Length: 219
Image (cartoon, rainbow, N blue to C red; front, side, top):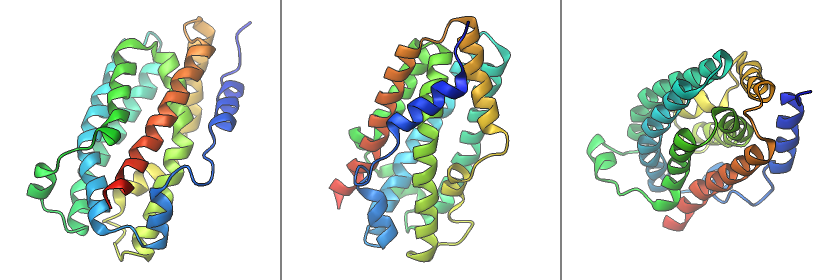
């Protein structure tokens, strides 16, 4: 008898739910006290992260043995393509030129997240990786939604300028069901290991917070 993907995801989501004070940057953005330079650095970091994650998702899609998991990761890759197109508008709205973004030196604490994503793409079972990535969706999506609101109300950015954060902060219809189907396929096939999936999800959450908390140190 196989386990339930929904039960596994709900359990990990509850275990890894963000706690107040863990993310040091988002509250500063909500207050409007984070300098535009730090927000521009965030966009510059993302300009390196998004292409990397795009390739990682395509790799996981290619490695997946079942259709639901292949389609899940292919869909995520498509989303990264849209995000990459939105980034130049965000950078420009924050006063960063293309040359500024190109000259920016990425921070190790921010780039640890995509490096771990790349590791998962090469070494983890795609089903286990799907659990880890889905478990991170809620936290990352909530952070992006909060930043998008604050950029409009505190920093005067337009809807077009905020498209990058809106893409990740707005739930995509059917995405949750697609993710659950991918995880269930791994459980049914016996290739998804709950212990490993939980381990990967926990590390993913740590790297997520490392990304956000590295940036305030630059203020």
